[in-house]
Amino acid sequence: MFCNKCGNKVEEGTVFCTSCGNQIVTEEVKPVAIPEAPITQPVKNKSNKFLKILLLIVGIGFITALTFLLINLFSNNKGGSSNNILKDTTWIAGDESEMVFGDDRLYWYRDEGVHDDNYYTGTYKFYMGSDALEFLTDDLSSYGVTKEELEGLFDRNSKYDESNLVVIDINYDKLIYNGAEKEVNYKHTPFYGFILKNNTYLDVANMNTATYYSFTKK
Image (cartoon, rainbow, N blue to C red; front, side, top):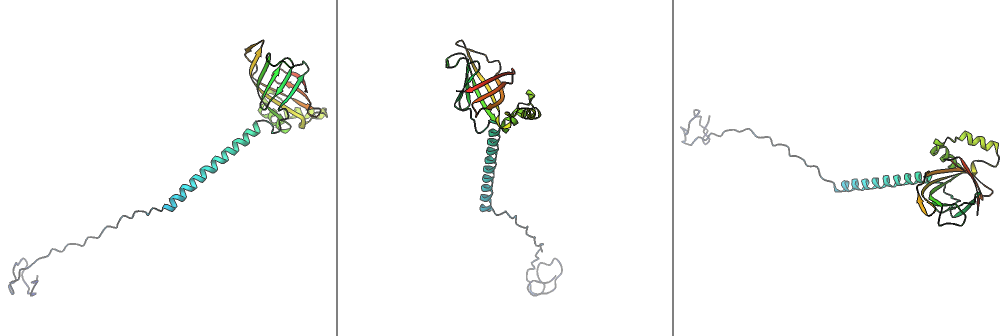
């Protein structure tokens, strides 16, 4: 080793230089530490975050609107024909009973003109033409009326065709008989048949009891 001051060669472990008397300072060589790479934090891009939120809101809005549209389309398809020609009309049956149609509710009175006793009431849906055919053969398929049978009927009788085919799908919720409310035996009672004579004559059958009725518009 050598003196730090004069450069004289001295023995290992010597404290003072034998040439100049300088105190020998021994420095321990330490390895240079390699600095660790700094942990890089991702830079938060507020614009990208806002854009993602905006796209999420728009996406939710689109899905909601689409769902609402599909529900309405389905409801319209199952809710009866858009042209309800029975609305706000009164019809008299062959037994002189009276059926009055409102917007979505009907009243069937046993006696024409007597509206405070002896009547059924409930909600209804009216189907006509292709809507009636689809509802009759699909939704009411358990009653056994098929498209083939209807087409055969159309072929046999020229006054009957798909255009004047009707279905009145009734859900009775009240029966008043002799001043008292009674239980309704057939709450769901569909009728099907035809509307004739420029929409002034109904020739229909009760699909629960197979009873035929003829109504003339009042």
